Amino acid sequence: MNIATHPWAAVFFVGFVIYIAIRGRYARPTRGLERTHRQVDSLEKALLAVVIPSGLLLPVLYLFTPLLWFADYRLPAFVPPLGAVVMVLAIWLFWRSHADLGLNWSATLEVRKDHQLVTGGVYRRIRHPMYASIFLFSATQAMLLPNWLAGFSALVPFTILYLIRVRREEQMMCNIFGDEYRAYMQRTGRLLPRWKVTKEA
Ligand code: SAH
Image (tube, rainbow, N blue to C red; front, side, top):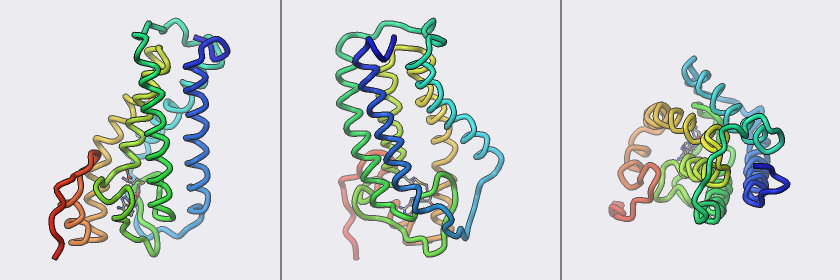
């Protein structure tokens, strides 16, 4: 599989660049903001140290060098076009969740000075739209890159990070925002929207 000869690999690369550009655009203004609470232990650091290089480096190695081609396999023809559709949704959700979270975004478990609890926009019915988007994008990677290493290099480590992080993040948010976050948990789903909206008093 080569980016020059395989259009689906090129489609993946375009989406990948857009995804990174969105992160860069919204992460930049948060740099240097004061943090009031930080919950980054060695497990969280170790997870980030695997997820980021594996998610970013392996696809690039795969697209621009032949090093990983030994692990190629064949995907059914309908899978890559489906992957491209899922990718559009993943990019939209990544953009919207960054836009809605604004300066409250952080790559890790921390809370900033003047941190606001965001419950609107794509956060209205889902508590973790950004993680939902990363799952969708990671699945897209597996659907567009038919390679055991590059295809799954985001999905597998991110699933582990998510499973370990999500409870800790919600616990941290409960500690900081108390009943406001607990009520928010009641009316939202973690990754999938909760439509049965409980009436607010
Ligand atoms: N889990 C969220 C946010 C990911 S960024 C998502 O998937 O969309 C991680 C940081 O965002 C956390 O450390 C926390 O500080 C912050 N955060 C998470 N949910 C939030 C919310 N509803 N409002 C404000 N900040 C939030």
